[in-house]
Length: 433
Ligand SMILES: Nc1ncnc2c1ncn2[C@@H]1O[C@H](COP(=O)(O)OP(=O)(O)OP(=O)(O)O)[C@@H](O)[C@H]1O
Image (cartoon, rainbow, N blue to C red):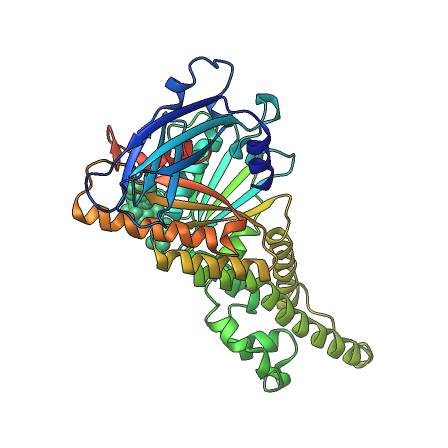
């Protein structure tokens, strides 16, 4: 934003419109105008490369307080710019300026599909904020722009099927109908993934820690390994394990979008590879020591070594965990997109999520504020309260040390259906211009 403001200061305005407005009711109000109308003389300028500044002068007879803030909403795609204020007893000066030449501009979307590496986008946030809807719409946007895409739901409470109005249950890849390039969707079956873990960590269909450790030739050390919480790990794999296993699988798509589970679950998922790597690593080291100590005895008695056993399977699982860990932190290929809604509670949780992701060295660049109320000149009482909450939450984002550093993307509250197709599929066209 620093470069943007310095550009605004240094470049002459492309258009300057003056208009006045007086709010008829107290509370937040909106006024809108179309930049294309006012810019008709500068036909070479694309709306996508415009920015907006506003100056306001208090009218002499204004009775309002002196601390009113003016908020700007730009929706160039839909041809409107709105100003929102608690006090419209002002004269407004609106300047629209070009911030870059068309050739220099890279849209958010272009940036997201740039590079040669396969890209992983993980959308996460508080429960119910619209992670699935935004993941589905982003995936549709990628596919419609020619990028073979896979969207994976790792949230045990799947709702991807509802977003696409298609049955995606069953843990299989399903082609999504509609988009131009291939788009596949997958709802991870947590039970299946857990089963995979159990079979990797247990020997010959045995169950429990004792069998597993026997299989490893470490039966007598079960007690000593108590501090690794191995029993817990094998009998009730931690939430998120299924996701980690799924993520580590090889897929043949240029972009993979993950619709993750709500915050707490996702954070456990992110720290899981480290935990598993450390635990499995310790077990394998121990086994190695015992094997070398007993190998001399075994050779004397002519006993054969066992074939592929639990240790090999576990070693493979550990390798996958290492890959997952690297993937989470690879800034060139992976990005965690935080999804939030404009409420104080959701913003607070998003700030904590951002801090935790930073601590885990997971790259985060963008924040989607979903379900923003579109401007309206005739709010009901409920809507005007909601709008005030929304303003407060947006202010919080701007002032938050974690969130203000992220690129803000706005997703409006949309009508749920467009001719029988869930409108949320098309949110991506609005968010990622
Ligand atoms: N921009 C929007 N406009 C209108 N409705 C929306 C919007 N975004 C999400 N919704 C609705 O909000 C509800 C929750 O959305 P969604 O399932 O995408 O959230 P989620 O964060 O994935 O939820 P969960 O945490 O339960 O997985 C759904 O009914 C969805 O249709």
